Length: 267
Image (cartoon, rainbow, N blue to C red; front, side, top):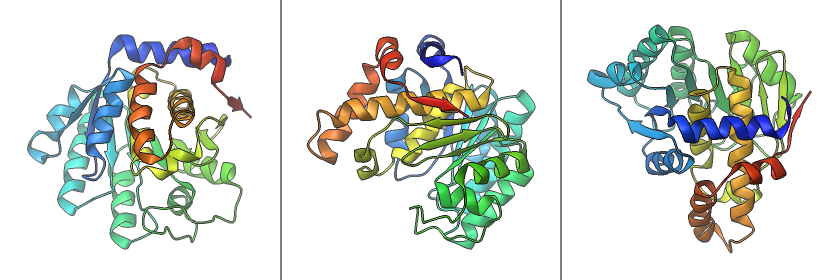
């Protein structure tokens, strides 16, 4: 990646182009995902019914699928939307929430990966490790320790599905199986608020809607998202004030802040 200027340029494209991000997401964080997408300058739409999910995906800039509160009917709707997006060449982000915790989640994620082309697969370390074929468990939706090199785990998954793999955590990892980005932006306070992972997937979707190099799009999205988290944490006293400040810092984010604060390493 050619420095922080590249990150700020893709950020400005999101603000200028206002990509439409179609979500089929979970009910716990749906409002936060919509508002965070809007604060970044993109346009969120939530269309879950199978009777319209395909039509909505066809006019979107990207599609974000989140299995946090899944049902079999919701997975059916995701597949309809995904096939529509595939037909139009619209990027799809899968947030594999809770994979490794239950058989339904594991089977549903694998069904999505089998029946539609997923461009970006996002999860925490244990979710991604499980999809990569490792014998790990996830504690509800929280990551557990993975006894492996996480860069190798992400690369294995990316190569397995010819996709971009994203592991979020203290240091975010993004890879398309060849190039690898390590993102060192963010703050521990982000982990105190339910939904920060889901919102990250939304923002990755927004950036993928304007940048066809999906590894680069995901890395840039996570860096900008993390910068806003750092700025919000500096003026917050706990998760309540952080929640409010986070939205404000995203809204007030600009190229100057990104150029000064982005910490992305390509290895």
